[in-house]
Amino acid sequence: MFHFHTQLIVCFLPSLLALFLFLILLRRNRNALHLDLPPGTMGWPFLGETIAYLRPYSATTIGAFMESHIKRYGKVYKSNLFGEPTVVSADAGLNRYILQNEGRLFECSYPRSIGGILGKWSMLVTVGDMHRDMRMISLNFLSQSRLKNHLLKEVENQTLLVLRSWKDSSTFLAQDEAKKFTFNLMAKHIMSLDPWKLETEMLKKEYVTFMKGVISPPLNLPGTPYRRALKSRSTILKFIERKMEERKLKMEAEGGDFEDDDLLGWALKHSNLSTEQILDLILSLLFAGHETSSVAIALAIFFLSGSPAAVQQLTEEHLEISRSNKRLGKTELDWDDYKKMEFTQSVINETLRLGNVVRFLHRKALKDVRYRGYFIPRGWKVLPVISAAHLDPLVFDQPHHFNPWRWQQMNGSSLGNMSTTITNNFMPFGGGPRLCTGSELAKLEMAIFIHHLVLKYQWELVGSDQAFAYPFVDFPKGLPIRIRHRTLV
Ligand code: HEM
Image (cartoon, rainbow, N blue to C red; front, side):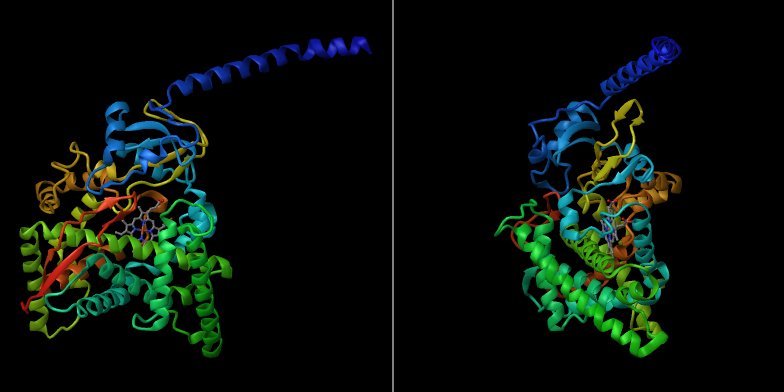
């Protein structure tokens, strides 16, 4: 027996030694790799640098925290944020790399509180096959043919509904009006809700409470905005579920001929999603589709009020479209008109570049990643700061100035230059397999709203208000403006 054991040990000793050496080398290698972690500081225990990172700052800047960190450590640095070791990237190349490698090297990873409030099936939270299926539904629903044949008309209707309610020489909060417009549009598009109905108004009210929770600390304690938002979430879900039941009954009554003109009908008819999944999909699309584009419209109103030359050029562009339609007897805008809004597209790009509605995204590394000499360990959070390149003087000349003409100059001088600048540095809608599915709708909303705004009204800011990043972008006073009717056409 003893002899047998000795033989066994002698046999396996070289392999054991080799394994032992391999493990030592591996460990050493990992330690060496760790030396290549980006520079930076982990801040306080647990809290890390989160409080400083989230301190509000002017939305047209990258904020003091980011500025000082980039100055000290460079565009890629390590920190401890939202309770996790994190690599922050203000480097456009790395950001693109992160977004394009979704599912392979990196994965979407929003804080748990977001999942708690938007739902575990929300598109912002799901990954892998589930995300792909939901994304397909949302892409189908926001396809170019739907934009052309269906949504453009609805966008114009909802714009006019809001703008026509404005009384001459009145003062009001432009941000609220923009929210009204985008909410009504999404409610109509998603569940066929009509803007003037009581139920739509009630849903809107619940959504305000809900939104306050999405953007507040996730403290589920009595009286906190987060707790109130969780309550609103369940009220909103009950409402959507009721609509769903009504729709199912209608579908049964009308058989296969039912017109699935909204997202609810489409999801019920064409997907295999469960009730719970459809509810979260609808809730999160309502959120993604109305908060972002309303901020973008408020930002455009704000930036344009400081640029009379841009308003003048916009007015000329839209007056021409409107006069030509009048000559042709056309009473509604169509896709050809939209395609003529060239300077408007420059204004939209510039608004998104300077205002940065979404400033950074949440990801985590699925594997140990090496990028240009930096080491990002598996499991670490990664925050691609997409706004950083938009406000980088090396990329955009005088980046803090609202200058829509820069997009035309780039276009004019060389199309090659323009497209490289856009694909490499301009990422207001993210990128890769999670690129915003509503980007074309958002631009359409902005363009049609601007069309009627400049033709019907002149406006000025009342008092001083400006956009802040909390990091979600908001006008603390709601952007008060005074308007005057114009009769141009
Ligand atoms: C100016 C307006 C908008 C901005 C700046 C914006 C920005 C973004 C960004 C940056 C992302 C990527 C998030 C990530 O990768 O983690 C995103 C995703 C998304 N957005 Fe938008 N968005 C806007 C408007 C809209 C609209 C109008 C809709 C829908 C009607 C919409 C629906 C979505 C959806 C469904 C996703 C998730 C896509 C996915 O995970 O595959 N967005 N948006």
